[in-house]
Every structure is written in structure tokens, then in C-alpha cells.
Length: 446
Image (cartoon, rainbow, N blue to C red; front, top):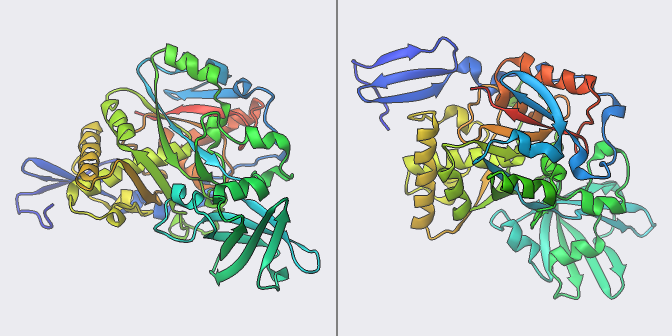
């Protein structure tokens, strides 16, 4: 990639101020412009009034009877999830996140009987992927939040059950979390089995209730497989085997990726401008077959089921672009930082570039002997972002002043009135909000 341009270079600033295009002989390079950089966004422009009674405290008795808002070509209509197939064109590809929520909330008592909660976030060893972390035996270290940490005076806390003992010890205090070492007996149990024995489902705090038996099943998608999330990919909660069978009958394809959802998904935006907000980094885990399926479907409609699926496939594009520009890159160098999509120079912005990027990523994986790509992404999708892979998203209705609302606004277009029109309609037409609420199919503005 050239660092300077010849005297013959012609610079054209687009009237919509989305890109500066620098023309040099046969190639065009695109730069994000300063005024469209999400760093300059104020979250105050992305809020709305959400009455508490509109937050779904429990799921509907039948998953696929949830309401579905459809937004396409600036027109709003509604249906139910059971009829999703009526709104998905044949030969489309749906991308599902098959992560599985773990019972991440552990409760211990100190010497005086005071209850202390340990919320497991992710493995403390940055080099450990989630599959390996859940398979650990004898002991493991995790980054954790601790409720009533000031009551933890002892060196260790113990939980004892039938023929089972779990011990927790703080080994490091971080600015916003703790590293806790867990040890247990019998030593042959995996950490996944330990959590199944002792943990509770981490339902969202805004539900304002304790987990119940129904949450064991209903706070999981029917296709959940890879253990590791501490929050559900909620857009997928509405899908049933019946709905998915109907989609297959309509010649709609599926592909599964994995992004383990962290507690940062609930992290509020407190900064005045987005440059002061740090996105949480999450692990994606995608195999070569999934990447090849996405590559083969670029000329069709690709629909991300959930914000996590969208962040995953869009991250694959940028990882591929990095591999294309630097074939000798390390895995660490492929990681996507928060502002990378707005600051990396690209040759094209269309599906042609996406084909080159995904092929470069597959070539990089083959060169490095990898059948799975396990890599971190911190991608922020906000107004000013142009989708590279996805054409639409299926997603729930999100909290005011959240990064998820920024993502929705970016998908449907940069006009701030678009997302407001959708949310105003949902509020006026008795849609249920947040994790156990209803959802939407939002097509990107062409």
C-alpha cells in the first residue's frame, strides 16, 4: 500500500462526507472522514423512554409467537416469528451464533454467613480459548465480578455439596474486576461440570428477579452448542425447530459461528462522546467451512441473527483485510480493535472487496495450519459504518443509550430518525422489549 501519492493523484471529497476517495491510476483507496467517525457521536442522540412495563420479564409460552417487526425500504410491517420464512428470500444465508450460556453466577458464604456472589466473566489467561477453559480440570483462573466483595475477609471461600467441594481465592485485583482461582474436588470434573453443579443462570439485571427453572431452557437458543457466554444471543431465542425446518424448505441456508457474549454487553455508555467509551473485547470462533459458506453466499442475501452474529461476520471481513494487506500477520495482529473499521485504508467497499478479504483469511488460515479461527474482536458498529458482509439483521429491541442501539442505527442508515421511527412504532404497537421481548428483521439501506 503506497504511503504517498503522485502529483497526478486526484482527490475527491464525497458530498455525503462518508469517505475521502483518493484516485491513483488504476486504484482507489478509501479513508473515513473525521466528521463521520463514531468517536464524535454523542450517545444522547440515541436514547428513548422505555417504560418498565414494556420490558418483558418472562418469555412467551411459545418462542415463535413473539412479534416480528419488518423494516425494508423504509416501510414498517409486522408479523410473528413463526412466519419468518415469508420474509426471507430463497437462497438467503442466515448466520446463527451457537454459543451456549453458562450458569456463571456462583454463591458462597463467608464465616459469618453473609452471601457473596462471584460472577464468572471469562478466562484470566488470554491465551486460553473458551473450549479449553471449560475443559479444565482440578483448577482454573477466571476474571470475575464479586458482589459484596468487602465481606470477603477470608483467604478462601468454600462451597460444599454432595461429594463435591469448590474453593475460591482472589489472586489479583484489577480496576474493574478480580482474578479468582477456583479449585475443586473431585479433581476429575471439568469446569463446565463444576458450573453445572453450582452455578445459576445469569439472566439480565433489568429483569429484576432471580433466575427460575424456566430460564434454564428459555435463556438458551434451541441450537446452543458451544459453552461460554454469560448472556444469551437473544435474537435467536425466538427460533424453533419448526421455524428452522420451514426456512430450509424455502431453500434458505444456515451457517453457525461462535461469539461468546460477555457481561460487557450490558455496559452502559457513560462518556459524553463515544471516543470515551471502551468496547468490550470478545472471542469469536469460526471454522473454515463457515467462512467458505459466507464467501460463497456473498452474491445472495446474508442475514445475521443477532448483533453478535453481525459483529462476528463483519469482524471476519476486517481480519481478512488485515491478512490480505499483511499475509505474514500473527493471530494477535488480526485482532480487531474498536476503531479499526474507521481507520484502516481499504481499496474497495463493495462485495468484491469482501470476496478478496474472506479468501485472504482462508489462505492465511491454511498457511498457518488452522481449521478454526479463534480471535478477539472489539469492533464497534455505529453510524458511519458501512456493512461489508451482512444485508440484514434479525434482532431484539435494545436498551436506550446502548452500543447495540448504535449498531441498529448503523444497519438501517445514518439518518438518526430511522431508528427512532422503528422504536416509536414498536412502543406504540405493544411490542415487548429487551432479552425476552419481541424482535425485528431490519434490512440495510441500499
